[in-house]
Length: 141
Image 1 (spheres, rainbow, N blue to C red):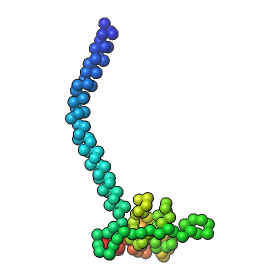
Image 2: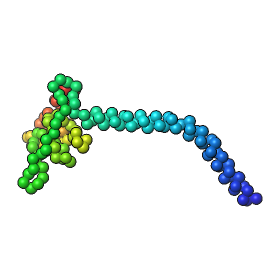
Image 3: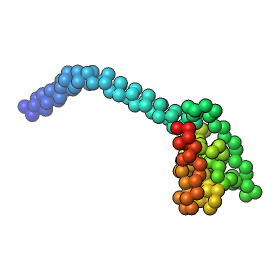
Image 4: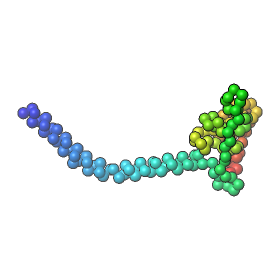
């Protein structure tokens, strides 16, 4: 008697999964796939816009990067006032905010005090000297 009650419970559970849940999953699956596809497309668009260094204004094209010079001790020599990528060792023109190679944020050493900060900052956090990023972005925005 106990075995038949347990078997009945298992059979009812399997029937519920096979019939009721299967139809619910089949109904929701296209919506889940559309949601995942939408998130993937959003990820691609945001990634492209974030990394893209192409401006909409005239005379502003793709910003090219150059390799940072090496110091005598083998580390990359970072010039003051020039945006650079710490990971790739690339220097970018003024106004660049993201590395086109690795997609990381760029850094800039203040031309006045030498403090290191994000290249997207409009001014140095230590001395307040303008970095050129805020004015350049406002003029071409």
